[in-house]
Length: 394
Image 1 (cartoon, one colour):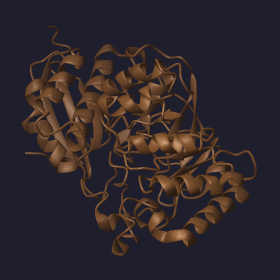
Image 2 (cartoon, helix red, strand yellow):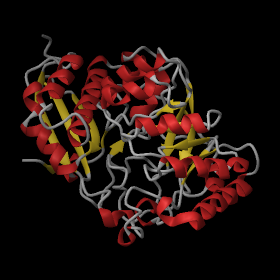
Image 3 (tube, helix red, strand yellow):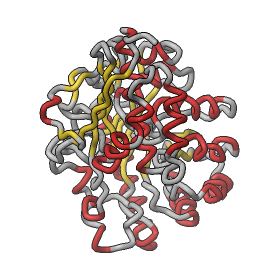
């Protein structure tokens, strides 16, 4: 084994709540992500949790950072979600599969982490931890080889990728040059018939601001049920919604079949809160979606995302990852599928371009006028800006 690839050390840190990191809801203070009450969500049935998403703990886990260092001192780094619990898993369980090993053996290391965590894992927090380790390994391999990650997974298919943007105001997104806007659905089944009418009016107001033809997508954030989703889509047909996203809870596969049967010509997407290739199997094989949207920072990392994409390609189901900044950009640049990606507006008001990971890294690429040429810097092209401000996990 070459010393260039032999892993000498694994360091895990958490990120102070005052700083941005890999948790989408840890954006360095008060932002539209936490104070925006106009989004239907799984907790909407409880009145006391409607005003702020932070009230029911959406950002309670926080961010982590992992560094994997070789014997020659090269460091792969990644950020992720899961905070102290996920960082503890990495340090006290998964590190044994890393230290002393060859960093090129990513598939074996992934499989060992996954199998070792089967008694308590398979979805959720353990997969978030595995994702962070996996991304750091890909970053390390790129840095040792002096190549960008997209070269390690097949090379570039395209020089430029384009973006739609997720944020609170479609017209602001349009003015920033993005080809489409994804907006939050404000109300759900618990708000009754009047709420459904307000939802349609809300979406119609966005349409009026951006004009005809500009794609508007709707983020329903796991908050609807089958009858409501069917009725809402029918009521909003004149608004011309480009796609309806994550209308049901992740495990309601049968519900997506019923929705597809009711509205076969509309576009339905989901996947950001699903985990591993096993979670996507039926959604892909039964062609229940127009696009699957794994989150590379949650689903099991780039290694698992590539497996999901290979499976989906056999069924001609496009894969467009949820958020995840440069981690998703390298994937999209290497794939023959859709040439677009999601940019999640990380600015406090959602009306300007800001780094997804704040000032955590040096080298995070940002879209300009809704476009980006993925740089050819080694790994994912990022290094930690100030490792000293991170909190080591004991």
